[in-house]
Length: 381
Image (tube, helix red, strand yellow):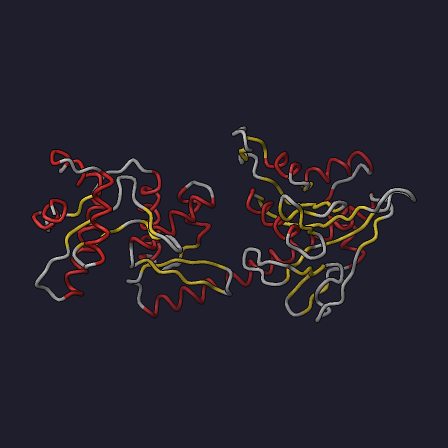
């Protein structure tokens, strides 16, 4: 009752749970007592409790959950709106050294700035403005969307995320969406061509320097899909993939008569690769019917199967902590997971050693002999 009376007597303010405990500690109230009692009052509709809202749970701020009294004698909707406003003002007006909170405020400022200019802002732009990792940016954007209901998100072509403020007029919003759609079509086409060209370079490299490599092929529903791109079956959903996933190439090498064959599975990505990308590829291999196997230690990649990840560049600043807490580099982590990582610079090094050439010169020669063809807006070699 002391906790409830404290909030009632300060009904025009919002307090963090630790502040309530500090104010009432002279009465023997502890931090653990505060939230245990407030949960009961929340169920009765007497108090409003605010925290970070995740996908399926609510977590506290650095100073604990933010709590305020829900005034009685008012329409329920009006009283709740007032309670939310009090908590919002408390978050806005406080000086915080919490990096997450600072990023949340920065996200809102960036979205407001773009909306004033009648533009949409992309997730990549927000991450650049925050100057943090993709995970940290995702966390900040998610919490900003929760804290500020005037921030909105729109997804174009089910792939590109953009954000805006709800104060934008429908006319300006529709115009901004149409501009971003045109930009996405142009950039998406360029990335599509670059991605497929990178796959072709990796394939050429394997054909050129791997003795006895036999590529698997697969018939697809349309001739626009390369037959060497393989669809594998999944026993478990992996990051939104249900039932099936695609890998760029699969080939088998048989070293000798008495040596078992080795199967290599290739995934290509022409951009900066992070640990999440490697883990995603590993999960696909583990849970595929073709390349995974059940073991006493859980689902693992089959013996005789090696994952190969070819990328433009791997994040040199990213380190992974192993069980004893020691940080190791991303390539070292991938090697522990039985995945080989290759960068464009690695291919160039081998080419200079063997052919006195570079990937660019090889690609130009290869592309010139094959000719770039265009069909349904898609380019491939």
